[in-house]
Image (cartoon, rainbow, N blue to C red; front, top):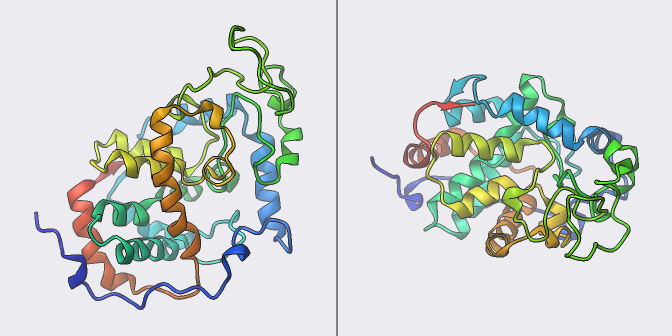
Length: 296
């Protein structure tokens, strides 16, 4: 299998933003109603029970089979309703992210591929899943909702916030000698430092794509899989929430997820990459790490 040298591929001008960093992810000033309403539905309906049902529905990976590029082409039809920064088809954002990573880390080809495919799970929205169960920031379910989540006040409408096991974060954690399976306002159904791999996250494109990659035996390194799985977990990687659920492995992976976020967030701009020119290089990476048709 021949892997194309990144330096040998013609690509558009470097991604360039005219926005200041502080202007990204502004959910307070002038946020569009579509963004607020998407989060309102997400925070109301994403309960522990709902997520378990969605995992049962989607993680069989029996919906269809297609290649990575075929799935990526579908994102031409999707504009993320939760994104306050830009209104462009998601495929544009995919190539913008990947290209900036390639420019910065030319030697880490798996990282380039992660940049390209990280939002691929959003194809669920094209197959009937509402965007509030596909896009946007993710958060754990089955434990207290953090007030560091975007629009955290909306969780008051979530039935789990009234449940004694999942109550909204307000009280101090119980002594460790108390069984955590009992009523707890912080840990809910989890143990302290149980590890994020043992936490049920709100349903969305992160967990879906992660499961697709693992379920199809893709060989992206663990660091890349963590980027895929947790890149939308902003309360954790950007606000420091839910650290009490982390284990030692999560401490290591947090560095990689934060690095990925720099490219995911700050490459959003109106400049359009030449996707047709770029596809041969990325196809070579797909052939290396995620070849053939995958089960979705």
